[in-house]
Length: 214
Image 1 (cartoon, rainbow, N blue to C red):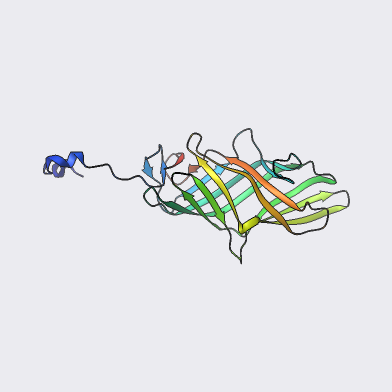
Image 2 (cartoon, one colour; image 1 turned 45 degrees about the vertical axis):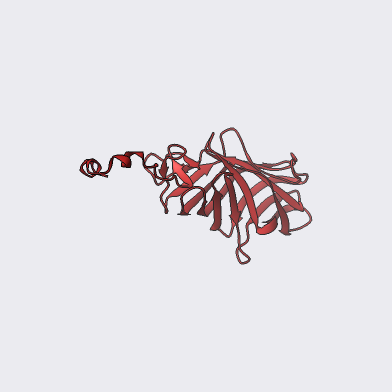
């Protein structure tokens, strides 16, 4: 609103409530709205790893010191509400394993992207969902004493759920269950994904500011 327009407004106009915040903002809670089409990025939090355990809460499995995701915002309504994103990439590298018989981790690959993703205001719940044709799926290539094996896992319920936190602009996943879809007996029957990504940044906005959930 221009100064001239404000001068011509009724006296009560100054008491009008501020514009409602969107579900996703940058710079601060209730700050500038994240624009539809902006690309959000995050890497696994410093000093942590992205883990695939063979049992919930277990210490046996695969740990990756490098992991990152990229998502495009497709809808960012006023809060309270549900924002929508499309996860276009989710990568893992520098992985090691303490699974009996596994000598190395050749690769960890997330298949079938993009995935539809929602972020709920208030609870901060983040849900990444697949489809029947493109399930949430991860392929592990593992070196063993008998040679390399390929293990394919799919998310239970075809979705994984995390929680966003404004304290460190993070998204955390804890013990998200996967079951083996294909692979030899060498491949563990289940996998449980745990990771914390922080900070989540709006890489499209000037200065790549941190993203908040309202």
